[in-house]
Length: 132
Image (cartoon, rainbow, N blue to C red):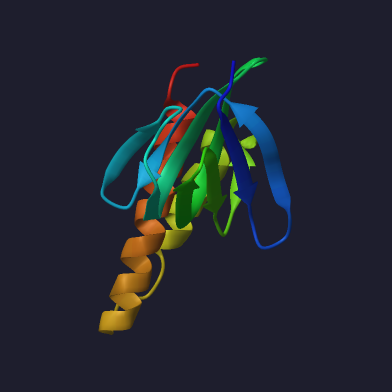
């Protein structure tokens, strides 16, 4: 069934190393879908939902930026944070959004950090509000 292998890695651990038939995840500039036979790719990830289809069905994870490499049927996703969508709650995402809103924004660096934190929290909220 699956001609792709997904390897999902965070700094702490390898979360997944499994055969998949399809993938969809956020790049920094939009969504991308990966099917078997995909040409090689290296790209920067955005924040949002990683959806994958395995022999057991569909699974979803929230990914927090990072990088992706597609090479010879192996999709390697390196992200700073990832968790199953089932472990996310709208309340936690809302709290993260409020924390991001409270960040200072006096300097250019502060504004960039705040914008990044707000975007991450918005994407997390969107994932938690998506009907399943």
